[in-house]
Image (cartoon, rainbow, N blue to C red; front, top):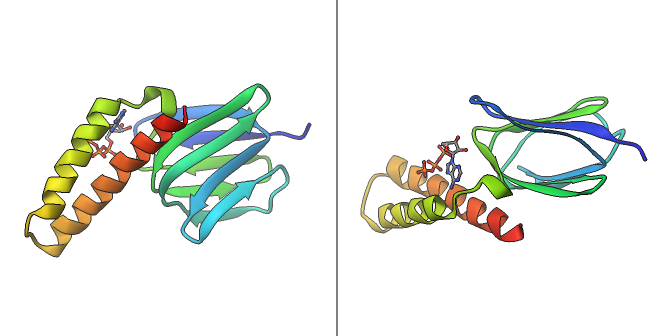
Length: 133
Ligand code: ATP
């Protein structure tokens, strides 16, 4: 079967590196399924799950924005933060969600509201990915 390398990298570390048969991500224009020999592209990602199919199973990661770069025989996901489903701390994500909810409920300026919305999306994405495990 035709395969390609998938890497998930953050400014802090390399989160993931495996040989895959398919990757699905949510780009700014919607869902994107990458199969071997996909045309090269770079596109921004939403705060959403990333699913990687490989021989022997499927991996899921919570990716908090960034970009996907599809090269000839390698896919690189460059994310602001990313965690594999099994590494997600549920209690931390629930606390982050609660904090974000309080900030969204409080009357505050637009910048803080937007930041709270992003924090809420990151927390909900982590909880959602964890539940897919
Ligand atoms: P928090 O308020 O809990 O820090 P956050 O959304 O602000 O959440 P980020 O700035 O996206 O956190 O990430 C900071 C670092 O913490 C990254 O390395 C990220 O992978 C890690 N991280 C954040 N939340 C979790 C979690 N629930 N489980 C595991 N790692 C997490």
